[in-house]
Each structure stands twice: as structure tokens, then as C-alpha cells.
Length: 114
Image (cartoon, rainbow, N blue to C red):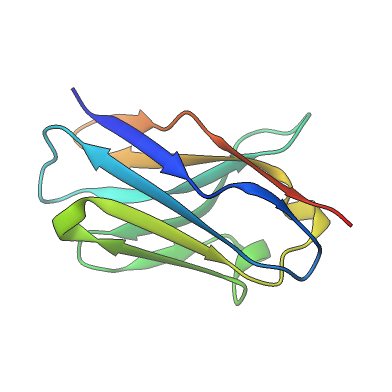
């Protein structure tokens, strides 16, 4: 059984920073993808960033230059460093893992507000 445990959400002022972490446990194959999606109230879930086991990354246009995704393969952990946060970044952020199938974390709330 694969489990994803997220941490790092919270309330931050516009222009501030947060770092999200997600640790995967269980039977993890070496070739996988990890990343983050988010869902704002009344909107569909959308991709924020993905990183493959080899290190290749993809970002949503709305976060390019502000967010950085990274991972520690030995720990099956993915991080999302979020800088220059904007109110429109407010959402529930979900950790994602493709490990022969899709897995999702429970979600962590990020609120950007003054």
C-alpha cells in the first residue's frame, strides 16, 4: 500500500514564501513521477508542477519563475518551494505520485492573504 503524507501548508501574506513537502511510503518503483496539483474553490484541480525520477520538470505557466519543484529519490520525497505568492495561489494543494497508477495525498491548504 502506498501512502503520501504532506506537510507545509498554511497562511502567508502576498509576496511571501512557503515550502510544501510530501513523503511517499510503501512499494515505490524506481521509475515514477511526483508532483503537485491544486484546487481552488469552485475550480477544477490543475497541475502545478511535476518532476520525474530523472529530474525533468514541468510547471504550469502561472507558477513558472516563482515555484520550484525538487525531490530526494532516496527518501521518495518531493518538495515545492513557493515564492512570491499571490492571492490567486490560494488553494488546496495535493501531492501526486504515479507509481504504476495514480496516488494522491490528502491535501494541504495554502492561503495567501493580507
